[in-house]
Image 1: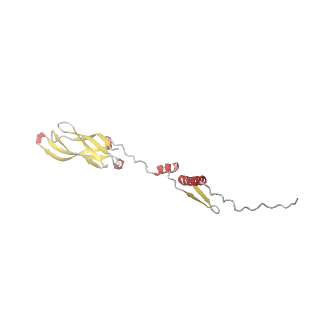
Image 2: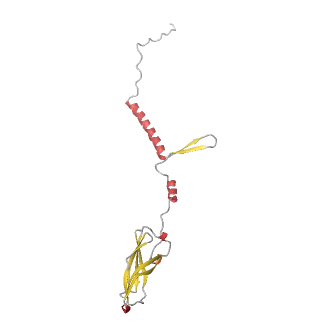
Image 3: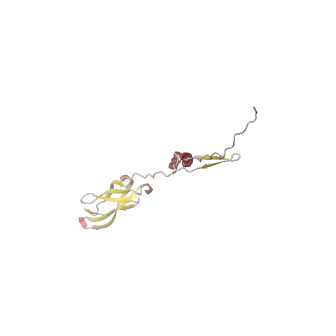
Length: 189
């Protein structure tokens, strides 16, 4: 026997080339690419901090803006904002009131007809009054021969008092006329 080995004969044609991946393979690639895009979007959306190291001790930090602020930022923003303004509690003791006589017509011993208007003074700084509230200030005028006259004025914009002048009749020219605030009601607080 001889030790010569003869090689097998060469085929007449080459084997067919492998087929490219079919639909199943391309779907897998799309799932991988879609997952990678989702992970990148999640990283950017949640604002993960990326730290890049440089030479020596210097470091550069880059942060992505998060659409949802973190709790510490919200808490510090709340502390930095101006607090809700507080106003004085306005009541009858917050004011003094006097009457200003705008007209007087006397009839000898028959008495006088007077037209009077309230002259109101707030006892503190008017900045303590809520500018958006309307305060109805009820006052009682004494000295009319028929008895007390009750009237109401409205205080708006801290300093504007709207009222209707009161006409009273006194028993004599010497009758003392006085006024006192009986109630203050706030509307619009």
